[in-house]
Length: 75
Figure (cartoon, one colour):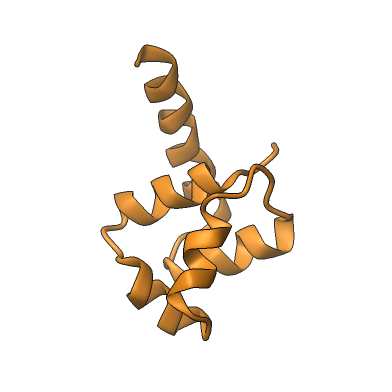
């Protein structure tokens, strides 16, 4: 699966984590999170770092992204 910044933003929103909080967990600036969430493609390594900071397992993140896919189709 190709991951995008929209996917990351969706996961962060579902977990109810604000960008500044996530940035602190990842040791980056909030602007880095904002830029990452606007990307059209996110590498697997960055995706795994992001979901780990959200306390998500890969399988759970993928299940949530399936919901996201259904939600975006329904819009």
